[in-house]
Length: 374
Image (cartoon, rainbow, N blue to C red; front, side, top):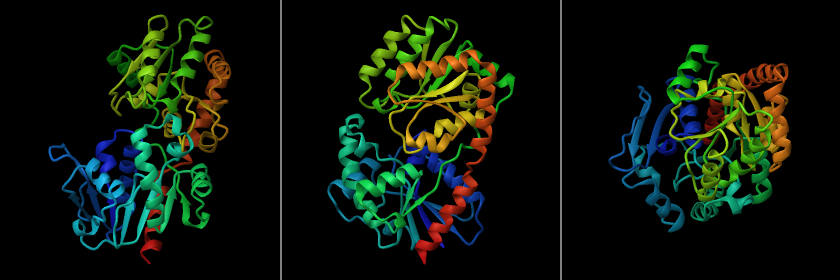
């Protein structure tokens, strides 16, 4: 069986769908025999520094135009530019990033969340227009739709009125790099970044859906009680973020707040482990991968009480209602003052994160590929 997989997000995106694509393919490669041939296709700028996984059963092809122009051709202009001409007779094509291209082959598409449809006020208008066209078209084209959570499956079935039988849920997992680091690794990270403990951490692109503004209000309210505690915001600046960045900069003038961008994966486990806990107040998620990353790295988790967060974290996290700064501050204060409660969360989180694995996800994906190919 030959499976062609869209590897573009693995090249273009550091976190999010990029991390999903890289982690998934690593597990697919490790967990399959030679009877499956993998073809990675990608659209990237000609001068991009592209590094692809190798292997005797792995081939690849670069499409002749950038991902931006390719998506315009496929999903804005509706030109049936088939992917088949660049891939030699695949049995299945997997679109890893919300969409699947025109093809005569059976296809599978992964949908990560429906934030663009359910929370349009926090979506970039251009991205929303693109996904509004491309996602329903890809769902119609695909034989199977992979949802990353039961929450996303429910949203898909309700919003697009598709049969639940067409949607399979396959959970993410934390990448193997997220393990509890040594004390020396944490100390080295602190020295490299100039961080002082104790601190809370939040990880994610700075954009409206992640709700950094509620976090800033919560942190300000606990600062007088916990003046030695700082807040570390890790994440690049995303869309519609000018007001959020301005608020972060303003708060940083009177509060111990650091905004770190461009932090490499090599430092993230130690950043998590060195913190009092991850605070993740997002208004909406399809999954919430930082929760598992933090748990696997050995820290406590406080999250907004969204359905996906509840599904992922179970009883291994503290929750606060969405956009409720007072409740979020109370949970943060509990972690800062009750070491026993914090350690219990850390232990529960380690067990919870271990129940998710990319090996299991790879087996589920392969079963879908085989079923679709037949």
